[in-house]
Every structure is written in structure tokens, then in C-alpha cells.
Length: 70
Image: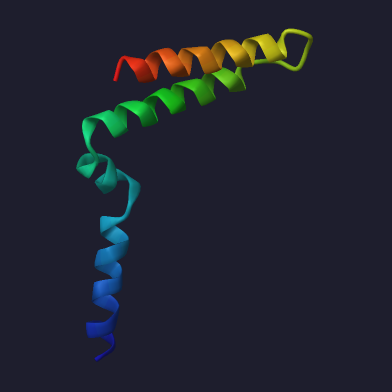
């Protein structure tokens, strides 16, 4: 009886895992998600100095350009 209740929960967890969802999502959504990942990596490279704001602004512009190409 316990297995009957737990199996549907396990199936839902498996279906909602990120790797399976990325295969099911439309290509445009995956493209936009990739743009955000690239932007986050870019922002992590911005150092805390007087150029940090400009660096992060450039990263944000790169995200927008990437999203337009999706």
C-alpha cells in the first residue's frame, strides 16, 4: 500500500527535474534560459571596483542581445 502512494510522487519528482524539463521546454525558452546563464557567468566576472556597474550593465546588454536572437 505504501508503494502505491509513493510511486506517483517519485514519478512527479522525476518529471519535474531540470534535465527532463529542459528537453520538454520549447526551444525559445531553452535559448532564453541559456542567455540568462551566460549573463550570470558574465556578472560573476565583474570585480568590485569603479567599473563594476559598467561591467554588469554590459552583461545585461549582452543578455538582451542574446534573447533577441532566440
